[in-house]
Image (cartoon, rainbow, N blue to C red; front, side):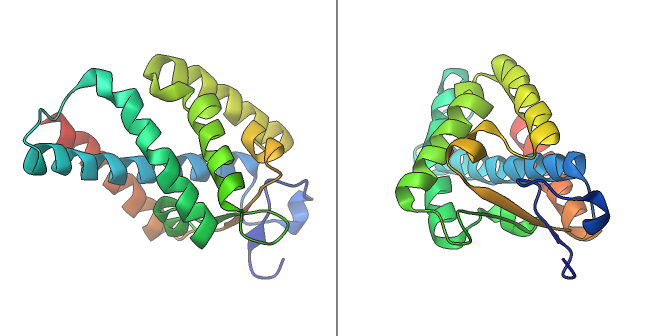
Length: 178
């Protein structure tokens, strides 16, 4: 582990992984997902507003917009082992040291959408994400990692990458509010 790689999806000895622990890895995974969603929702905002001239705040579309992200995430995981947010924060998802198949990536993304994001319903998602967080910290795997036999590999991102990610999320949040 001399290259600062830790494997939170597998049991590891903390002294072999001095970079960060499971709690930190879980928060970095969450931050990567929020970066992905922020970029995707910002793109949807511009498409609705400038391409189709639709209202930008349509509340009932929100769960469906999450669903649109599922095949995009699956394609990214299949061909790059990562999404843009995961790549920014040095996270890769793979299966047996190889890339996921498109079927496995799609099943994993659907499970994240259903089990982790509660089909895009915000108030329910708070609870489902909390459950996933507790499981990830306790076992090193979320239910969708376990079911799809995927391993999530982390390398410690720089402080600049973390700050950029937080800034991007805040920018999109405030940009969409006004």
